[in-house]
Image (cartoon, rainbow, N blue to C red; front, top):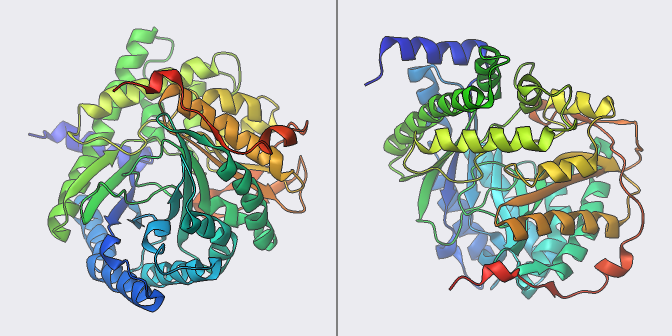
Length: 454
């Protein structure tokens, strides 16, 4: 039973510390929409999404009203579209037509994003996968709600370096097509190693083929709540610090569990998972960087940053798994630059670099996220950065990702403005020494020796 003190405590978290449910995401399987006739595929995809998700937004609003819990986003993820379009799509333009259908369906039901314009190519690339990847720049340019993710590596299969090379070029082309808006199209494209099937957060969400026909996944977030709790134990030892984070993560996750169960019941769709990631926003007091500062760092990037982030991530997970039977997705702490004012301040102070962010990704939830780089960065350099991040995920049996934004026409020291939850970002310097010969080798980096566990 929940007592009155816990109710009061939760209300204070919501009102004063930016606690929210970041997203309710409905995962929808489109496997039964496959057909060799593209018109039939488009029609089936639109009809299924709009039928299953027609009440998603209204139910989210009802839960907000009933419990007083802010639910920031209502979203949809679908089966990777390279699979759904494989029989019907013969050109990149054919896949773009599916992107437009997804966008139309998202618009009809009122969600802000729909994820799953995706391909899973960690071991090899089919013709359909390649066509989808080549269609991404145009698909993201002509749609408003569609998000794309490509999984190019895993601990079991290694890293598909042909796909990594192609995606360096794809990211630059995507940037060019939205250069009038600071290349914001790249904010809707993420490259993964070990991508989870049940991630509710964009831009990486897709509905895995092992999932049921439809499912409700919820992502919670409360960096401000954790920071406030740590202020009460300022100067205490690490044992006290960890216990405080763990207890706070438990409370945050319970809110997500409540929302997930209610949404599942009201929509008559099975509950999937709660993703307990600490996801920052540009709002004051809603920052993972500020948690790291409260732990004892002058800025993120200072010596001790990786250890502090490892501690934070681990305690968040330990507290969260006690609060829900089904914790999944990414779960931990996000460190996007543009979406976290504290990270931006650290970059501007000269404390946080791309190389340090890469080191931090060894112990956090995702990877190099929402990082703006010069628009004249070479495609092979972007591919090299992707390869480095994929290697961290592959070797460490964890999810890693890259969401780089080469901002066309801007250089180091300039500012890229994205707006809304995406915030703004200083253009960060990139190591421009060449890796062309490495990226041009082609083929696949084999899986590590510890992948052989059968």
